[in-house]
Structures are given as C-alpha cells and as structure tokens.
Image 1 (cartoon, rainbow over the protein chains, first blue to last red):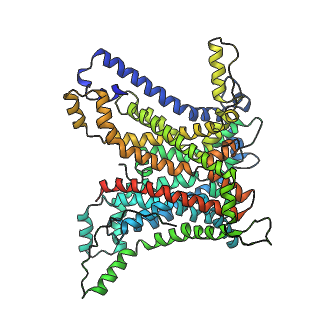
Image 2 (image 1 turned 90 degrees about the vertical axis):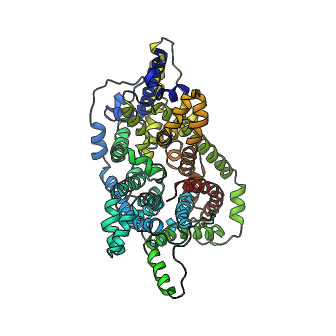
Image 3 (image 1 turned 60 degrees about the horizontal axis):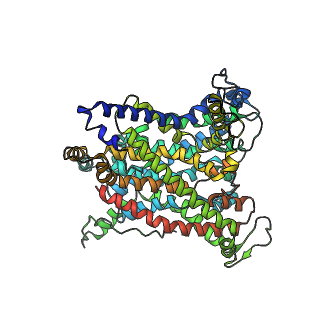
Length: 288
Length: 320
C-alpha cells in the first residue's frame, strides 16, 4: 500500500529496489484486473462452446468454438427477440421521457432556482431511497384496475419515475457549468424559456445529456423486480426472460451464457464507450 | 412520506419583495416554477401516491385468496409482521448482506484504485477489464455465478480446483457445493464482484483529484509513504468513501435480482425485498405485505435522514 503513493513523485530518481517494487505492483494490478475480468471472460468463452464442452470439470479451455448457444437463444423454442424488443422499447422511451422532464426541472433548480430549490432536490433524492418493493403492491393493484398489466407503456412510466431523480441531480450539476454570461446574453436578446432550452442549454450540455441518457438506459435495461411483477408473456423484458434459466437443469450452460452475453451486450457497449461519463453519472454528478 | 427533514439552507430569494410589483413578482415566481412542475407532479403521483395506498391497505384485512373477507384490521397486520420470525430474520439478512457487500467492495475498491493510480504499461486495459463486471446485467451476472462459476459439478471454481490439484498431483480436489454450503456468501460474492468496480471508479476519481503539490511538498519534507497515505490521501478520500458507501447501500439494501436468482431466497438468504415480494405473490396477503412495506419505509426514512445529511455536506462544498 505504501509504495504505491511514492511511485509517482519519486519516479525521477528511482533506485533499483523501487523499480523492482513498481514492477511487482504492475504485476499485481494486472493480476487483480484479470481476476475480476475472468468471470466475464468465462461467460463469453462458455457461450461459444458446445453444451458438452461447457460442462466439463476441469474446464475445457481449448474446445472448438460454435455459435450454437446463440442460435438456440435467438431461434430456439421461445425466441429472445420479443423480450429484447420490449426491453429496448421500455429503456429508450423511458429515457426520452426522463430527459424531457429532467432538463426543465434541472433548469428550475439550478439556473433560475425556485424558492426552496434545495428541498426539492432532496425530495427527488429521497424517493430514490424509499424501497421500491414497498410501493409494488399498490402499483400492481392500480395496473390491474386500469387493465395495464403486461403493458410495456406502464413500465415506461415506472422506469421514468425510477430514473427521474438521478437525471435531475445529474442535469443540475451539468447545467451549473453553463456560463452565466451566455444565459444573460440570451436573456438580453429576449429569448424565452423554450428558446433558451433549445438553443443554449441543450447544445452546451449535450455531453452531460448523453451521460444522463446512458445511465437511465442502463438502469431501465437492467430492471427486474417491476418487470417480473407487472409483465407476462406479451411485455416481458429481457431480464424477465433470463429468469427462465434460474432453475433449469441439464445441459444448458452454453445457452445460459449466450443469453447472458447477448442481453448484457448493449450495456457493455454503451458503458465501455462512455467510461469517463460513467463515474460522473453514477455519483449523481458529485464526482467529476 | 417525504418526512426526510433536510438541513434548511435555501439560498435567499433573489427578488426583493416590492409592493408595487407584487403581481409581477408572483408571475415571475410562477415562471420560475413552471419548468419544474411536470417533473415534480409526475414524481409525486408515481412515487408518493402508492405509499399512501400502502399505508391504507396495511390497516386492512385483505388476502387475494379470500376476496369476500376484506375489512378493517386495525394493527393486526403490524403485530403479525413484527412478531413473524421470518420477517425478523430477513431484516437481519438485509443488514448483513448490505454491510458486508458495501464494506468489502469499498476496501477492495480502494486497494485497486490505489494500484491503478499510477502509470504503468496497460493501465487503460486493466481499468477497462475492471469495469466489465459492473456492466453485466445483474440478473445475467447472478445466473453466470450460479451456473457457470459456483456449480459443484461443472462450475469454473471447482474446475480450477480440480485442475490445480491435478497439476500438483495432490489427489482428489475438494469440490464444495458453494451455494448450499455458503448460500449468503455466494450471493455476497456475486454482488461484491459487481460493486467493487463501482467503488473503484469513484475512489479513482477521488485519487486523481488529490492536490499533488501538497503531496510532493510532504515528500520533500521527508514524510513517509504511510504518513502521506494516512494524513493526506485518506482524509481527501473521505467524502468519496462516504459517497460510495451511501450509493452502494441505497442499491444493495434493495437488491432483489441476486437473491432471487442465486438462492431464490432459500437457505436463510431471503432479504426484505425478497420476503415482501413473496408475501404479495405467494401468500397473496396484501394487508400483511403492506404492513411490512410501511415498516420498511419507516426504517428507511430513519436511515435516509442520516444519509441525506451526508450528501448535504458533500453539496455544501460544491456550491455554485
């Protein structure tokens, strides 16, 4: 632990012993990285094996690769396309709805703050701390009465409410970076609220909006509890589809891994593409 | 339900209360509020209204299996819930699960962040590899842990044990049945795997924002490496550690996916979200489930109050 801190300032005059320590630490960093990566790598490798090669002990690393697992996942008895499309619909639509609500709200909480803006901000955050499960029953009963059980649009609304606090907090921290002069100039030019939003705020904060959208998309895509309770055959999302594998027995490991990889792929791609934005988003904009 | 009291530090109203322009001031106040209203109304309707309904149902005798026997039950549901050993044990499980996962992820995350906070060959690659676990869909991650890693017959962990024992010629390798032998440990392992990268990312951001000139000055003054870590790095990281613990707790207290997938709540791993879910959808006792929900909400308000103060102190330093 101690040598780590020294490595940076002391680089210029490194003794052989320090260099030795540094290469050990490099080795350790690689080892830890590989260990954390191993389960994910194993998931991908197993998804490309045949069922019989996937279920060996010790593991067969060099078994021939095949796309059978994926073919079964997408084309098998129960196709994975409808749940994937449901997930995409719920995630994209709820993210759009969240942004439409969050950007003006963040404006009213940051640039031209309403009175008690701080209390409102904390109200939003406190809803995030209330356990989802405590509201599940009334939401279920309402959905039942309104006839929107197993309806993807209802899920869109719920996901929007789940992500709105995060988005408001994030957008607030991004809007706080918009230079006051620009806003004043817009006000002098007589721009109304809508114009300011569209012409000034949105273009200036587009990286922030992208980060917010990414986080909201990931959380919606991953959600299981609401989806499991409120959807069925028609509107079931990808995580609900995955729960079908919870108790399966027999030779199905390659198929499970193929399903896990396929369903995680959008999140992995989006997350890797926006690594730097990830921290800022997850910390509600508190960490830059 | 938002009884969470927040230290009141609203900034002073910008508008001087002028008599003549009272109407104009009111109009401008509404103009300020207008962009906020859709989000606020939406949030109140979708998140607060259900809790009011839950509160109402918690005082009712209502089991979906007996639709003719619905009525006022007074405090019966609360008594049942509070004296139910299953629910009490699920409270304990929730606490153990949350504290273990948050603490272990924080410590591992800190160690790994320190390892990655130096330039070395392939730093970017290692960082990317570290982030991967956090980006696997939680249900998928839990399934992979259950079937591909922890399975006693063909899971990777026992496979590696067999392989190691064979390489070193040690005879038959131990082949524990992880999920049965260590049910809570299995759930925790999967969650720690997913949350350590999150903690690492936050702490790495904290390390990067350290004032390097102060640390260099301390080095010049002959401060030891442990002293620098203990008296400069750790205090600087405090708010990042708090933030990681807070956000991690919010998500892990509510965890449903891993418990549901890996153990289906069996073997003493049923946490509160899972138990309430079961009461709704297996026992169909709406009254009892709601009472449990109300108790959870009250407990959460107490904890959230504390947590929000932490965030509040973080915000104070930020300011605009």
